Length: 607
Image (tube, rainbow, N blue to C red; front, side, top):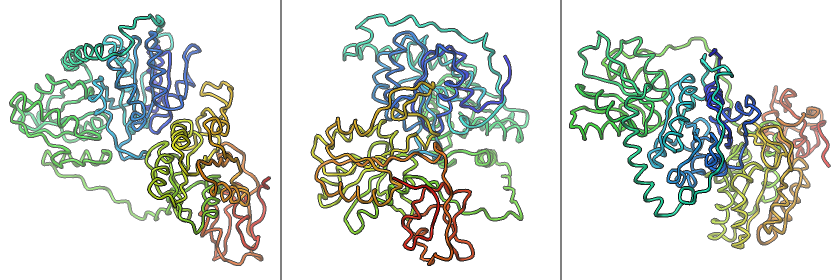
């Protein structure tokens, strides 16, 4: 063993490698992304790693490898589990042979997600065991233990860290390479009675699953990471207790070190719940405070146990509004909850003095981002017409900000296409546009195009192709021609895919050529049926910047059209004059093309 200073996600990754993982598949999404990337970087040569086109594909690929006896890992964020839920729900009824861990990183806050989902509900819904680590060290150990439980009970297992476990850093004790488990897959053994799902088989397996989870609840009551911490002398006679899980346990322990330890139950396996251990903890208490993220999962379990065992214990938490029922817990909020519960003075928050005001920095598209040019071209082309602009999940969702104001709807990955079709059915006089990025196109938009063509929709698809998965850290996808393992592969051509589906009118144009882009939109928008425009220009993070633009003050008429219409953060005002911040400008040249007096010069030239 040795120690390394690791991000929680890196600790999880190294724990999987130490477990002898054979196959890793996932789809990028904060806060889970670094797990797969770290494995790809540190994997032994015989470990296969891929960014799948979406979470459903990743889940099914891992299932096949597990059927063959391999140890597999699937990685995603909480909303990705929605996409993977179809195979997941059936997979539990089939079971696995090789250990299979499903890493789902939850995002309380939410910091970078469209929902505050709690994967612990999914664990109960799908009847899967779930491990909830409270630190990077525990996450490293838990994933290794999860493989053991998975193989012993032939079931997939959830590992559910939250943002602060995923992205927090700590000194972690990790195994040396010679201590790693070497797992050799047996291979797939044909057995249709085991691997082919039929109603009769599902009924029989459902009975086994329920019996197994009862057994696991008992076993988890003795699991070392589910633990009762006895009260110290200060609180020896107290009839109050605290229950916590995940990062909230870490926060709670920091406070209890200061206040003195009240009886404290740590829950590391929210499903199946360690009922006997919880009943032992509750015995003799009058009140219990639950600290958890996100939903009152532990709180409800304890309320149920109190009823089942006739324990007169008052359970406090989110349901009783003693703790917040939305958002993430923090070190300060947990400290306040505990001190209030124990009738101790609440700490006053330190107030910093003489702190200069922070600059206002709303989230915006980067300077030089080709998506700004794409949105602006569509906006100018459709000016004065009744339109709807359906957005999607990606950094281009920032097109909703003024002055662009070009995202009217955003639901989930790939939804914009079908939402546009739905609007068009009710308002046929509306010009319906759906914007989608290149990575999202492959992940979840293709079926929407098929639906549009088959059902004779009248809409325009706009694919914002910037040659990367920009929002989550520039991961490769099927259109980039490379894999996460560094292999050079055949690029999948979006235009060819669209034509193969049956879209007759497909045009590819550089959005930074403003005149050509506007002309293309006008031409295609007036055609009937399904049309597609591919705005193709690389993300500024994957290409070299050009010569920065500059403003010729002698020619500038101070109309500020460039500021009012584009919202590029590189265009600023200094002493009342329009100026361009050369440290931010990439030289895309869009501003120079809309300046009415051509006062903005330099930058790239576009074909």
